[in-house]
Amino acid sequence: MEDQELPYVLIDCIGGKHGVYEDHTEFLKTRFCLITMKEYLENKKFLGEKIRAIFMWYHKPVIDEELLQSLPNLKVVASSGVGIDHLDLNLLSSFGVKVSNTPFVVSTDTADLGVALMLASARRLVEGYQMAVSPDTEYFPADWLGVEVSGTALGIIGMGTIGYKVAQRARAFDMKILYHNRNQRNKEEESAVGAIYCKKIDDLLQQSDFVMLAVTLTPQTHKLIGKRELELMKPTATLINISRGLVVDQDALVEALQNKVIKAAALDVTYPEPLPRDHPLLKMKNVTITPHIGSATKETRRLMMENMTENIQAALTGLPIPNEVLL
Ligand SMILES: O=CC(=O)O
Image (cartoon, rainbow, N blue to C red):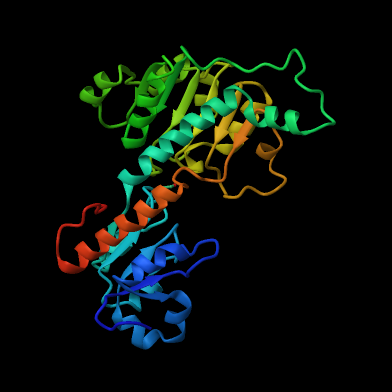
């Protein structure tokens, strides 16, 4: 344990799969007294009273009622990334605990990844790579062709910060951009990127060559894309998901891909993550899949950590929290 003057902040662990990165700890330790879950569990009585914030790096540690009851002085949970579907906001609020996330610093990289998935799927990059490196497969059969991206129609469902950045990038490909937002039409952003608003999601699905999901997961967006929606899409269309796996009915998606209801899918998110090794989505050539890496660059992860630090410091000094998540 360190300098008693610094605020005590609970983290899951340092290093490993869910841990705070080793090279971030130098920065964090100048601001906080970091307590790992292991240390906390070994000395619950003393540390429980001391801890004032949780630095929640990629959904860890899991926060439940029992943990909250044992942390009477907890003021804030700083969650990394933008999605907060792993948190029970009502429960946290009932304990008077505030919540923050880091929506703005993850948007550029997540939008980049959405475009990368679209291009990779359309131009069959993964298959192409395998063909190039494997001496046993035929090298570029004549009928092995991708589809053109430039000039096609991209439908963005969820034109928030990430969706907007996807649209900005799509302009460089001369794409026709359609978008749908459940609650809010943003005329200013819409005209800045030349996007066409579709009041009905069905219109967007019917007209798009690529459908990009960039919504947050809420009860309203849970399985937003199911059998009916997939059937509305063009048989030549590709579904790209950079939001949350549960926004799509995955069984319906498997069926649609198997039955050629749609052409392809490119997924950074699934449920569960990772998928079981024998899952059909892992065996299909028309599925491009990545392990939830929207914000996974060195630069963005560092910004996220700094952003979380600012949120905690503001909460503990009574200042407005820059990225407070309100109920
Ligand atoms: O999935 C990543 C995030 O929510 O930022």
